[in-house]
Amino acid sequence: MKTVTPQKMLFALLVSAGASLMPALAQQGADKINLNGELVLAAKAGRTERVAALLAQGAAVNSRDRNGDSPLNMAASKGNEALAEVLLQAGADVNLANIAGVTPLMGAAFKGNAPLVRKLMAAGARIDPLDRVKKNAAIYAAGVGCSECLAEFLRAGAPVNARMDNDETLLMWAAGYGNAATVQFLLDQGADRSLKDNRGKTAADMARDGNFTAALRLLENS
Image 1 (cartoon, rainbow, N blue to C red):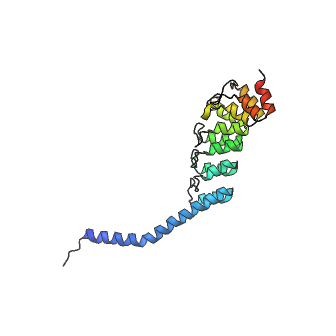
Image 2: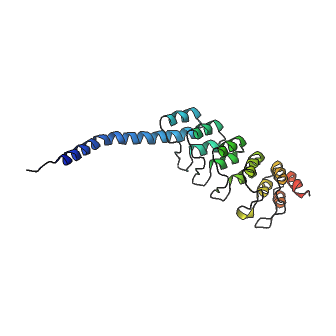
């Protein structure tokens, strides 16, 4: 007859208890996944109150969709300041990029939302990351003509004459999209109009190619 030691009895009890807990634990895991999925959908739809409620129920604030977009990335790309504030208060990772390398700060800059740019930077958003096509938040701001966003980046230490991919500068991006007011802003901040990209083109050449006469006039004036 086999001897049953106290240790074996304890082990058997633990195994039995674990088996009985497994369905409950599995259900809890499924519920959490559902919460996270609902959070992503609510953020994508811009439903701030629903997002807040799901976070209160335990949804993970940094949940992501198939593109790697977090709720904060979704809020930033739509310029939804109220939703971004809720997510930041819940501890959202302000530098979490999607699979294309786009961060919330890049999304806010592309939207031209300077107040949201300031909010993200105050929460620790970095200005130096590059996305998959080697653009940073300042390039996005120059492309859409958000001088106010650029002012924030320059104050944070972004070089006004930084050479990006293909040796392009912020001034070239602003000129290439015909953003005359931003061209003037960058010139006032010391942007060098004589710099050329890897094709030998200046910011004036880019404005000329796009037939952006207002921007070209600013760049041709000494």
